Length: 297
View (cartoon, rainbow, N blue to C red):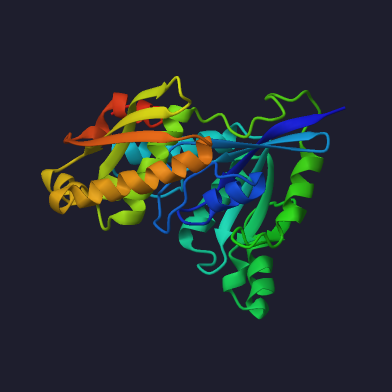
């Protein structure tokens, strides 16, 4: 009998959920940057191990929302947790049990369901501090298990995989065995461009921008032609993204193109344009394009 189910990765921003998803699946499924709140919509990473198909759900970090976009992100995280067979609370061991972590743990405990805890980034914490942290964390909710791991190095990930595979419900696989994600290539292209915006710009620009793929066409020679638009909230953000004589947008496009060629395993022609669109983060159409369900105004 096979096993199959959803495992939600839940936590505060920058806990390392996307890095862990990529480590668990062995592929780049979710974009990763040093900045908080990089993930906006839920992303699935699919792994078959023995007779188990594990469907990991990378959710946005949970934080106090201000914009409609923020509320959509936080709702996506809680919806991902509510629909999962297993829920894994990921905690940045360097930051410890912050008020945000305690609040998330309390809400997860109140909703019931199978729950485990993972202290991440243990490679950045002195070993003697880990056991007291784990003991205190274990008291926050009725966790099945407490794992200590490093998504960056892979330390402790094997034990987590064994736990997940053994505790999923019996049932048929929901996806083909060779499928690693449900993310369409159009959405992948937009996410890779957005990753470069996060990596190459500072302050409010990454949070004031969204990317949509306008055209994705496979050419007769095997190349892929992609046209994407970057919407920004203000004129100043547009100027920063374009840069002097277009230098910044060219660099964003160049690095995104190389990453897409690696992921798609073919040549890519990538064309970007930047458009000012005040209030895009309140528009239902923009939120849906980002893979989010718009909450009521």
